[in-house]
Image 1: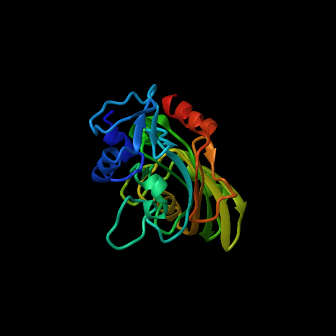
Image 2: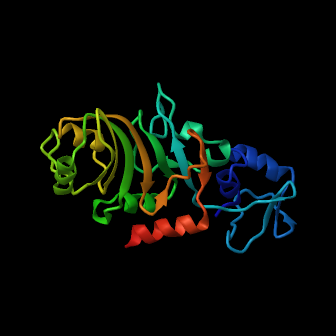
Length: 239
């Protein structure tokens, strides 16, 4: 990898700013001052420092966010705040994106990464990666609804969903449920309940695949996944 690309990719400035660092002798490669922006770096073997600080190369990042309501699951938008807008510059220069989507008014677990292959595998219908949601439902959710969800319900566009596992936590005028599905159709949870003449009034994603939302994360905050959590995702995406 070119030295200027390495430094800019790691967030040390634009290519122009990086070239200025190089010109000023602020960059050393294997303890030797390097001023050539096109110098080729072996990221597995070469040691690079900038102003005496080690430059640690990372290709991918993996973040867990507790998405708040009112924020779009997108990388940019001309009107509304996006989940990427919530990230610090330490992560935005990696150009991360949300894996799948949560509706604007939905809270909870959201994975962000710049690893396109992993994201593709996690979202592939063939992988059947489960996603679990907690919801408040206007109307009494019944055992019949749970049976209907297990058999698949027909959405407003005629699509019949795969089996969904519905657990009733509280039944009444406003019910509380947990629902696990393996698809990600547009507004799917809301449309599944509409198919049984009920309405979602609050929705929160609790988990995706092997990972559950870290309850220590306040709404609107995030953290990097641990190495163990990343390995769990890779195992899920390759099975």
